[in-house]
Length: 123
Image (cartoon, rainbow, N blue to C red; front, side, top):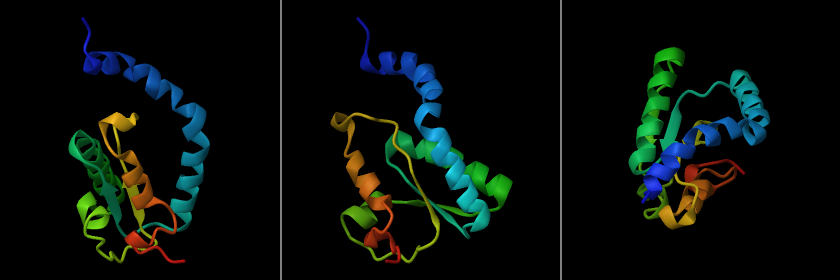
């Protein structure tokens, strides 16, 4: 009998290898935009084990680029609707789960979506 966690761990390499099919062009565009307009800070938005991955990103960004990174608690935005003044800064949402049954990923996407007033984006 195999657990869901074991199945997902065994499929991780294939999932990472397949990312280039949909991520390469977007990441190249993001890289170009960040070189043209370097952020003064970056935000990470994650919960649980996803926050561990976000912490790894934060470490690399601070070590290699000198960009301070702040871990943003989702509840500040999704529950308390805090008016954060972060327009023009980099926000990175991380989710290790791709299936809705494991969490409300639409919250993370909505929190980071361009033009979302909750993160202080300009219109």
